Image (cartoon, rainbow, N blue to C red; front, side, top):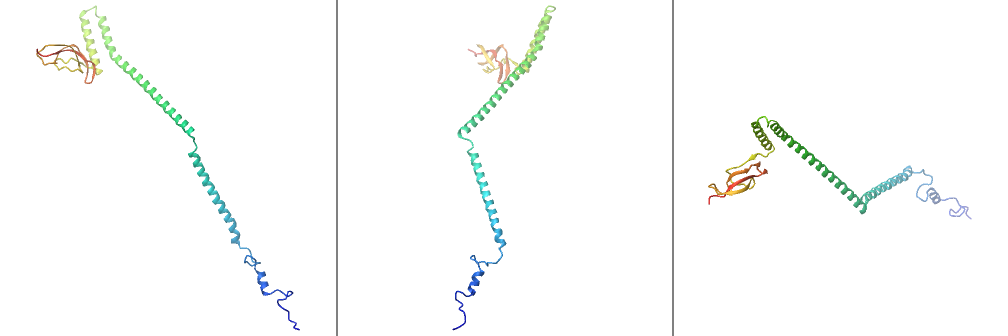
Length: 218
């Protein structure tokens, strides 16, 4: 009988294949090798990136929600109330403007009346002086009345209404008021006489002149 042991017998030592299989793990890495630091750092970095991505997505979604809330913030009823409030404010402003304009008109009218009345005060003074001297010398009354008349006509002219008669001119319905018409050798419609003078100029006629016109020769 041979004394050599069977390498494949169950009681024999480890074989070369056993040593190779013992030197590696199921993942293909040596059993006794140190852990890879790169692999160890990859996990937390990936977690941080994923968290940042989630946060950005959440922020983006929140902004979209806020924009949507702004768009749909007001209901139709609230929009109507807002428009009604704006309309009431506009009407109130318009009413304030109207009242202010009315106050300005009243103030301007009052100032104009005062200015015109002040221009006539010297005429009243002249009349009073004429009356005071009427008993002493009758001729002074005539002179006083003539002075008052001249002053009154001058005031009317200063106000933009000069005196006019237009004798010899053709009848103008804008400036004249015919009281009567008589036969004359002058052309038809010629102003023959003035019964009452007119005051004004151009389109601003305070009072038309009352005139007698010619109806031509018959």
